[in-house]
Image 1 (cartoon, rainbow, N blue to C red):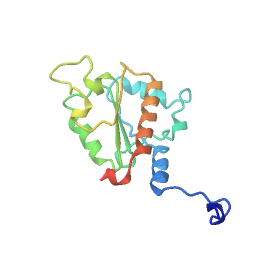
Image 2: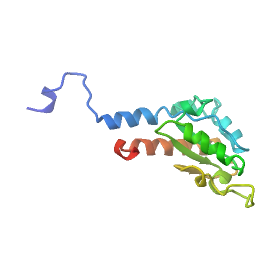
Image 3: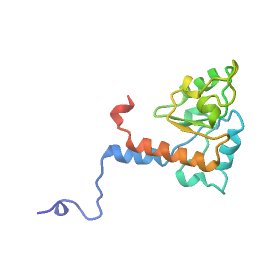
Image 4: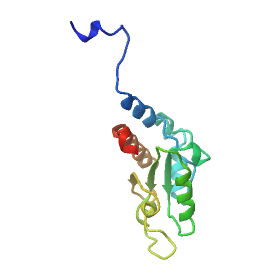
Length: 159
């Protein structure tokens, strides 16, 4: 006797962890937060031409308490660093961070006392998207990498 005889017709089985990760990966809500010129490309990714809605991320949240993705877009000045960290701390778990652009990834061409040399010195970064500024397609690629990471996560590892 096969497994089919024990399951009612139309019943689908899956691991709870896989279902949770599938739901989380297809409804990633970024916080509305732009620091420099890369934020213009982030806004363009939300336009109908690039259609970020097909990834479940069309709702840019105005508060970090309703978001699970922080896109650090552009250069982070030393004055803004505590604000970036405070916003990250206000986001509920699970949360992810994308460094959008060369300045957010490594400080870019601004190697001076006023600019933090990478967002990873303030918050843990999950995905780096290169470019100066990166095109909206690059942001969507970074979003797909975040989704892949979410799908591979184990609930026990998030603690």
